[in-house]
Every structure is written in C-alpha cells, then in structure tokens.
Image 1 (tube, rainbow, N blue to C red):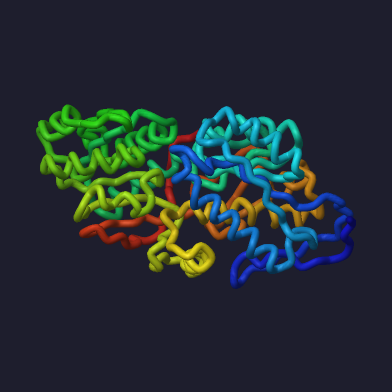
Image 2 (image 1 turned 120 degrees about the vertical axis):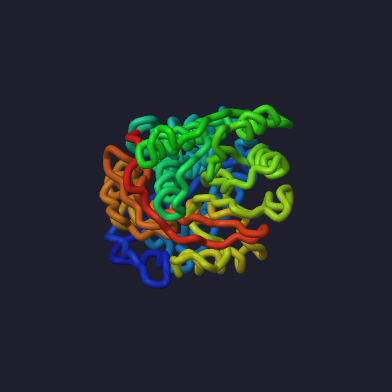
Length: 391
C-alpha cells in the first residue's frame, strides 16, 4: 500500500508534534523488540520494553508513522547474548525496519551487527559507547548517556554540590559498564579533588556472598571517606551496601544507573545517605514536567508504577525512529540514519538528544540524581557533566 501527501505524525509530548513528509513507502512501519523477555536479564529490560510499547501506543493514537500504525514484532533472547543474532534475523524476516536490543553492549551487539548488514536501524539503551558508529556501524544508536560521562558527573556533583572531599571506590568487576563508571569517577575525582583525595580502590564480583575482606580494608583506612562510589547492580550491589552499613560505614554511597529504582530497597532496610544517577525520577518530583507525565501514563497503561527510569529510554528509541522516518519520508535504514545524525538537542522524553555521524550516544544531556533518606527516594535535581574522559 502506498501513502502520499502530508500526514500528521506522532505527538510525542504535550507540546511537541512532528509531521511526515510525502512518502511513497510501500513497507509497513514495523518495530522489532529483540530483548530479554525471560532469564536473569529480564528485570533490566522489562521497563525498557514497556516504555517502547507505550511509545507505539501514543504514536499510533496520533497518526502513526508515514500515515500507518506501527506494528511490533518480538523475539525473546532468553538473556543469552548469542540469541540476539537469531532474534534480529527473525524480526527482520517479519518486516522490522528498526530494532531495540538489550541495554548492554555484550547483549545487544550480536543482533545489532546483523541489523547493520540488513540496512535496519539498531537501538539500545547500552551505556557503552561501543554501541554506536565506531563499535558496530552507522546504523547503531544508544539512547543512554555514556557510562564514562555518568561517573564523571557524579564526581563533579559530589565535590561541587555536596562539598565532599574524600572518596573511596568499590568496583563490582563483572561487566564493562561498572568498570567504565568507576574508572571515570576516579579519574575525574582526582582531577578536581586531588590525587590524595581518593583514599583507595577495591573490587568484588556480583556473585560474591561476602565482601568482608573489602569492608575490613576500607574500615582500616587512616582517614574515613566522605563517600563510597559503588559500581554494581542487583543483587550484588544491595548486598554490598547492607554489609557496609552493618560494619558501621555510614559514608554516603553513590552509584550509577545500574542500581536505579527502589525494587531492591527491602534488602537494605532504612537506607539513607544513598544517591543514584538515572534518567528521571519516577516519584512524581522530577524537574521535568514531561518526565512526570510519562510516568503517569506508564502507570495508567500498565496498572503499576515503573520499577526504574529505563522506560524513558525504551520510549525514546521508538520516538527517535518515528521522528526520523517521518522527516526522511522513508523507512529505509540509511535514510533514517541520515536524519538521526542531524539530531541537535532533539526533545525526546529521555531528554535533549544530540547525535552526529561520529557519535551515537549522549554525554552532556542532563541526568537526574535521586537521593534516599530512611528508605524514601526523592529527586535532588538534574545536572550535566562538565568534563569527562574521552571515549
């Protein structure tokens, strides 16, 4: 079926609309989800998937893409990265013109390489810059902020906003994201606070049942740190916090987006003095009215509050593709990518997004920092990094 003329495209927020250019596209706008619908990675992907589905619903209600409703096709990689390649082939065979892959480079790359070969745009919420033009190819885009920028942002915020001067780093040495996060924090902290302001660095693995030796080393320091920068994810991250607090370590604990959400808070009763960087507060107090409205729509559609902020990224992946396809007047991967590469502070629901032909991940887009007191989460505000390690 052919569509012609100027057609109204999706209204992605209360204040923003885009309009499609004339198109002779005969193909249907099909969006693929090659995600972890089951397995250990499922809790990480779940809200990203939900956000993407909410975007499809909102966009279709406003006219669809190139005058046609978006269709979704799904494939469960069962939390097994190699299955991503099978999934990409499967959904492309079903007509997918763009695909959302899991929120990790190792999980998303196998399928994204296939998409690249088939002229299909690949999205992910991976925070590793390798998911992009340099690591995969010109049709791969991340809707996240780079892990290197996140670590540097937390260092700047801790020093300038909180006035802390002594830090200690505890790295869950399991995945690439945590390594990049802690590495960039340490580098930026030493730049702004001085080399002597980093009192020490230690490592553990997410599956370790005990970090007693790491706790002993940290409590034996000649000086007490103002903050511990923890790079981890559940269940190992909450376990580490619980053990630190039980040992009398009451320093502030700062962490990255991998410990977003409050679903794990029951394992650390009464947690306070904890801060996490993420994409938006799901607690109704985000500085962005659009983010608050998103989480209201999310709860209305799914009948429950979001577990984490990741839905913003899933929504924005579909949103970005729809905007670009409508402006290109085509579903062709190369043509859509040419438009994505012109995004300059594009107002996606996750925040203003800039992509270029060389860089397909954000760095300076403002991120939310959420604080916890007595087990209650509240937004501290939104902040942008000033300087970060190059990637």
